[in-house]
Image 1: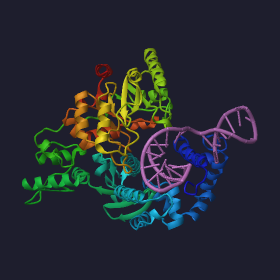
Image 2: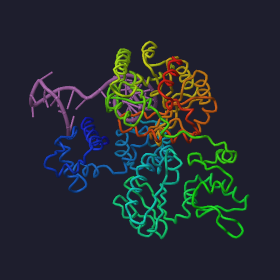
Image 3: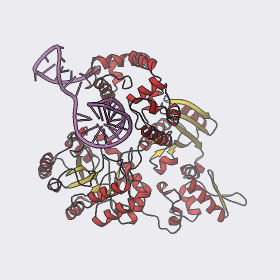
Length: 561
DNA sequence: GCCGTTTTCGGCCCGACTGTTTTCAGTCG
């Protein structure tokens, strides 16, 4: 509809309806056939969308969609994923140059045919070529939450089978990588043959790629995530978990180590070179133990020092999800969140937290209705009273996610910031500047005594946008110096900052917070991905400030102010 | 296309940046 230049508000209605259906607790499809529940009772669904839904339920498509697909090839939608091209450009490229695919687009850029079109030039051609490279780089990968949900769905499904005793995910998902290329599932139990059959019959299997006696591969859902299921005897479960968890580099190093010890390691077990007698296979602990190593948490298995640490009994005691006592970055309806302070607080209390910080946007984010100074001061006062009344059963920190302006100043004046308990400084615009300027900009925020945390420090959006350039070492050093913490943003689209940067910052003495940046109560559950990311950065409980009990966190924040 | 009413039309988050303009359209967040 955007490419066809239809009315923007109408387009938004479709988007709103889609999001209403997604977040509706009941099945909207079930409502269609129901007497007492009407789909039009769902806010965002009116008469028009209701009839679309009926048509959709009846035949899997609807007239308007069919007509648009006659006019524009479905592959044109892929072009919208190229940064810098919007619907107007995609329409122009299609109508003038018949460009319908990313390959077409790349060719046209290289032949400088884009510059012939109105409002397009060589700068755009260069930008599009860079975007295509970034897009290809991330194609075929999936965000961790999508992989996790798929793993959970399929595990539950497989465990319903008699003869299946245990289903576990391995691979990069188990290592907690921020994106995964495919999903590895391992199952044990007597019913291997039927299990594989059952697996390939899941209603959301899009394509069966392979199916043998021990292993089957499918593409799952329309997204096409490849899932491999291996069935194996319980006796080699540990060896298989070790082998299929990887990483490849970690496993190569382990196998080299095994050879030096006169052993050989494969997915069936660790065995003696001469004679082939198996010395360990049932558990990972035994395998690592026989190799003279402490068991290594999957998140560390990247061959980046973990084997040496395991040898010297110097592995860190990694942070765990249960260590988290609060969430220090969340939005409400005051800006671009979907729930109220009270609703967020209730969910957080149910999650067992002691405290949360409400951190809505500041006024520079006009699109989100960001808070100005007057609203900030009123909000701080409101939270102070809420805490005094104690009615919410959880401590609230009054906070803000305040924009860091291009010149390094904060979007709100210091007296407004000082009225709050907790200030996150974040970059949301002007990301396309040189490294030196961005570094100075961030240093400006770090030197502001009201700033407690730098939010999503690199600004990356996974599979969509690279980090903006800046001198991370200098920023980490400044944070350590000024006592400003770095955020591990647990949103699956960000996971920012991540493993290697965390280790670098920790080495400089930086402390961290792990926060979900929740815009909806259900996002509070993303904390697990933040914790896994922190573990990949070798963080312990002592590194993470929102593992502190409330009184200690309060005094830390007070000292900073 | 939805919603709410000042109830059957009119409003619907909008500012900044970029690259192309010769006064601004397109994209992004």
